[in-house]
Length: 281
Image 1: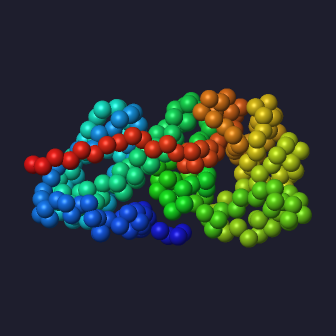
Image 2: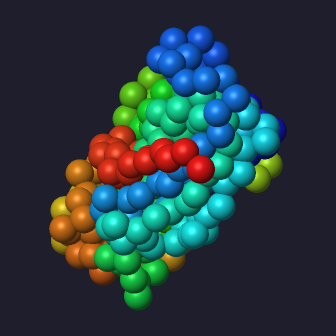
Image 3: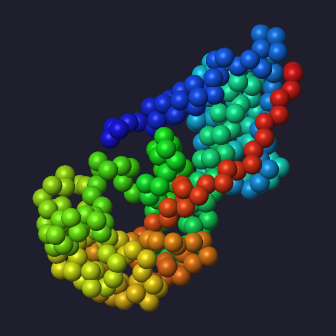
């Protein structure tokens, strides 16, 4: 996992999706003569940020390597309702067998990128970076984190192996903030982040005194966030987290925190409404 390339992620995601759908045993597609060629268009029913084109293409090309896809927009573009996103030409059976899996990827990843773009635009002009979390759909973590970047956001650690995030249970089990940070600094590989979660200003000061460089402010009020920024005095990067919405993210950013983590970017996903229409040549 630490060295997985994007191409490997796409291949694994698409293989799993096509297998789950039984795309190589599509009974309904057999209603169409085997060598029939067709054209299709994909239309968006709502405004969005386009994301997931590589996953979409791989679904079709896996079943029909001779399939041709012509995009009217590129990854990361803003699209409007009613626009044609791409044209597809290839074997009609294979096209229909790939349709659902391809659209699932494009709808889901476009939704993540769109949601992220909204948060990034809402905090424009502040120093705060919009960060994702590990609250992702099972099997799609790398894909969703890719979509966050397409939307203008930033990735936190991918998994448990590439950074240390110390939460309240780690602190309790290790014997306190000072002790747990001391151990973390000893075992963290060079270049890996060590982040600790604090729940109040007293814990913040304890973490700062123990040498913390990256601190998560868990469910702080806006006033306490402002005080935390003053307490830290640039000794550590501060990240706000916990129930932050699009409606209040600007207020959070204006407290002066460096980062804002939003689980909703990848967890509360409402797929973009897309439609594919097929026609014979």
